[in-house]
Image (cartoon, rainbow over all chains, first blue to last red; front, side, top):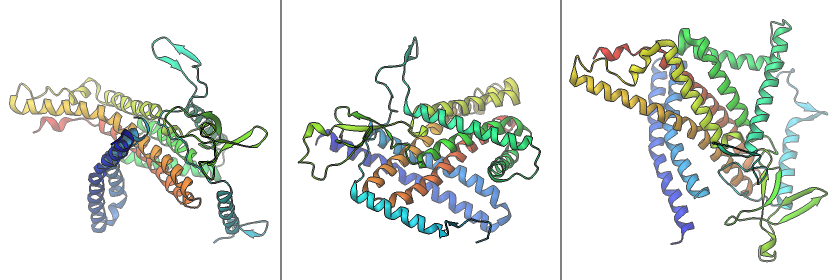
Length: 75
Length: 332
């Protein structure tokens, strides 16, 4: 196997980590939507915290993406 | 649709112009097939030799992302001066651009007030500045010409280049030949180096912004709590009275220290990763099919906005968390 093929496979493997972020965002939004459904008055507050939570969960996926991009375009 | 909205230009509904744009896009795609640009992570430099060399820091190049930085700064200063002029003129009802800016800042200010309380005045400037700067910088990606007008240079070794096609005097482009075997191999080794590249695709910018955010968070904490702020990191309050739990508290404090350093990385890579991936997405989609890219431009519009707000909001939340005392540590 030559280096170019290994690079592509490595970049693909690096993106496996996004599974966790996807599950995490799902859990966060699940909780937020249930909270809003029970108490619609608190929706503004819940939404702010939900977006913060999503940002944290998404950051993990972005690390994977950065590693994949580094593998593809730098090394 | 209300009458105030202008839906016609020269008596023709606006939607026909959009349709015309799509058709022109398709025709130009048939005539000159778009190519995938050479994607590289570090910002491209204008000149091969450095402008000047600093003793410790090293050589200094003028990069295309630096141009974007200057443009964004000029834009924000102009915006500020325009709004200032309107506010000084004494009109109480803001219209147009001033109204948009006021609405935006009001939303941000209310958000800060609910989180930071009496520290709103200290924290809000950071929140608003970071959000506005990152917003302007991210939306530069959507302007035609950014990332697509620039120098034509020979590619570095190991990358795929394209031949040059002269359109007119001082106007050249790189193109993909219809059949690759016909073109001589040594003719087609050029790439486009854009004059302006989106600033968020340069790690230097995002790391600098992240450093400012995290360092100023510590400054806020010290301003609010004084020297006792550092007991958050080196928690020795309970270590002698209750050795067992005191040690655990101390270890938790050290973890806080580690998490503050990881905040820098997380801030920097979140913005960089999102916008760089967006740029790559636009390049690849634009080279595959012409009309699809318009849809992804809309996606990037949203991503740019969300990332700007998130960067600012996280800074604001961390700052307001730093201003709150950690008295609850003494209880358990």
